[in-house]
Image (cartoon, rainbow, N blue to C red; front, side, top):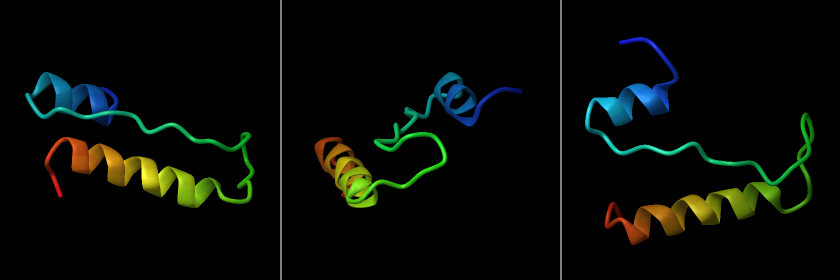
Length: 50
């Protein structure tokens, strides 16, 4: 199978998502890394992964 990793995983039965950035293209805003990390932790916790 070819395609984006998210698509390949979903088609293969492994649920996956594309995480979104909270910063403008090519920049890292203050607090955006922590915000993205906390969003991923919340997703993993809500799905029972951690």
